[in-house]
Image 1: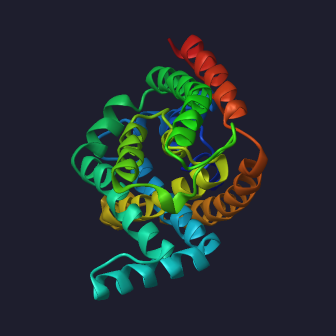
Image 2: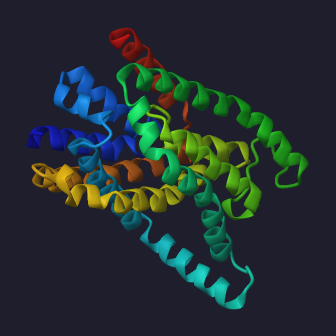
Length: 292
């Protein structure tokens, strides 16, 4: 792997991990489009330098998220330990902490058991393109069903206006679990983690800003844990010859991720998932046509 490839893939990872367009899908498709056969073949190998390289990028992305939400995470951690000490949940921070715990469990268990197999089996350009089309459809469907969800929120007494939404801390543990369960779909290259969790949040009645915030907070421990869990791959034989590239690529990924989360939190104050749905669908179709 060249340093140019490391920088390009790092920037790509940092942006697409948070944009609802699937970082895993893009890490498969971009090398294929650019003719980087050394990376395309390594992506689907059971053991490879490319997978070890991506480990470093995941850690950098998670650290960028922690830095951006540092004040929120400080409150969440304090709230969690305070709740454990008191054995009850009293404040919004304590409630959010436990919602994140509940929502992390499904993807954590599934990823631990099946992440490697799913990554290697479906990390092919045609499959990634097809799942990217599915991602676009999920985002589109989520926006269309949002109005129906708003009607349900009104009926439940959380709002009185047609566009009423609920606050993040009003989510029930069961609803947080559903959002967390949606993360499992991101194990397929082409399905976006942030996209499917945002859709699940929207259908629970959250607005786009709170759905995005919960999505990014929820992604942080999963991404960090996945990177740390796979760190021995980077330190072992698979990391030989790419450790310098990992450092450079991780710097690029971390900077890109920090810029991406700042942009998206502002974007979702007033805008929707629709542009990302269109992008996913178009790029997915192009990929399927190109590589089928």
